[in-house]
Length: 300
Image (tube, rainbow, N blue to C red; front, side):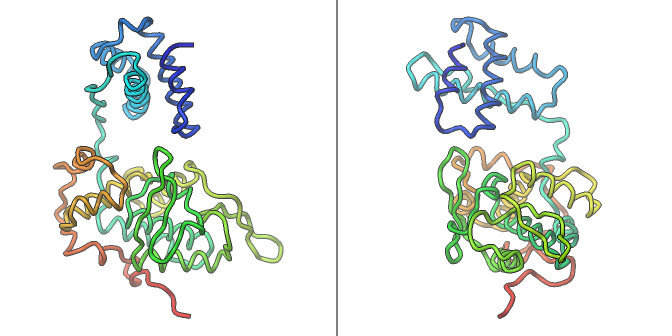
């Protein structure tokens, strides 16, 4: 077992999925550069560039994230210097994947789940919370009723730490409609929904996985006829970009989205993200349900 693989195996902060991915990255890197004396920034760059063959840029960047993490831990544990500190991620040729949603796209997306079925109510709540808070898909998966109190909701964020967001009226209205219809008394908020039984009732399953959230967003994007593949992290880009364009102070955006660095936050702003459609004076009036009115808490 290599040094970097052992470092990742001993980590207590990584999620199982991330640990498996980072471990594989460490194995590939140590096979490419056997011997710690060969670990330099130039070696990491050469390894990164060699990984491009047959892999998508986003896949290479995920592997690179694993090496950067292992390199930081390598230095923190006293083995040597952080040899991957300054290595840049690959720039994806298709930047449109990270381009924030326009107002029309957001309305079209919500318009696909304007019905009253359990699936529609769940998906609408998930999309609204994603767009109005900028949280990661893993946060949505981890959110439970015990983590909700008033306008605040707390769930596990990246790195295993708790992250609290503030819910506005649209979030509370969409969540309330879903929770009342789903008759959820405890446990995870966003769950899978089984097929209707003979009596017409639908049983709720376990909490959604990240893959489940990705599938929901992707399928809703197709139903809305949005001409690019959608993914949950796009809501994060949309929230940050819309908020900054609307004049929300960066420190408040970071508190809501959970970003821990201004450098990372600034990466969401680019020329591609400049839209001809103005966002408006503030974030509260942005999302409409395809002309059917904004999502507000139901009375009674």
